[in-house]
Length: 252
Image 1: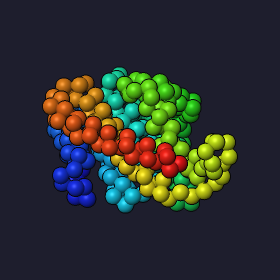
Image 2 (image 1 turned 30 degrees about the vertical axis):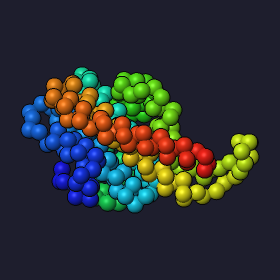
Image 3 (image 1 turned 60 degrees about the horizontal axis):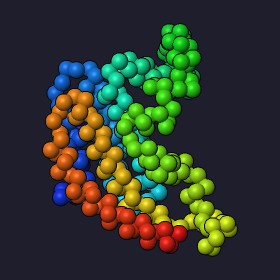
């Protein structure tokens, strides 16, 4: 995973990115840890994307990517805690590959694709029956949050909001028209979207640090000091966001 020079060298984001990069690039022969490293690289790239969107003050995209970062962290934490689920994780990945194969343009390399469909049909049928309505860990979203040791309030307070942005739900453009909170209209508010980028950033910091903390604990990596050194900076940013949030609420 290459360095990302778009991140300010002196920023909290850079410290988190480099710490995750350090863990992801450690040499190992442990298949379980290697899988976690792969997921950590995914999370780190999403984290970089959020940072870039914040730099551009694109709150819509930043909030959308925040939801994806939550998912990446949850997957990484659950797999880190449950080595016995590694095969299920791999099989779910296989399921998606086979599912996509079945929607490949049959006119492209027709003979090869038909042969692959026939050769993988038995695997496909089994995997489809198992995973068609389930995540690889078989947990519902709220249960996965709990298993990932994320505070209960994160689901309703932040994940739902980020999901609304990611799915372009009505929430993104519906605004109250007076102080009664009974009259509503559809309106694009670029000023509020712009503000959202700040909140997405800080939440991304905490999600990444939480992911790294659990990985460190499960694999005994000894990152407590590095993560502890980040805490005062994160707390300071949180306090700043709280004040900004009040101003945004008043504007809403």
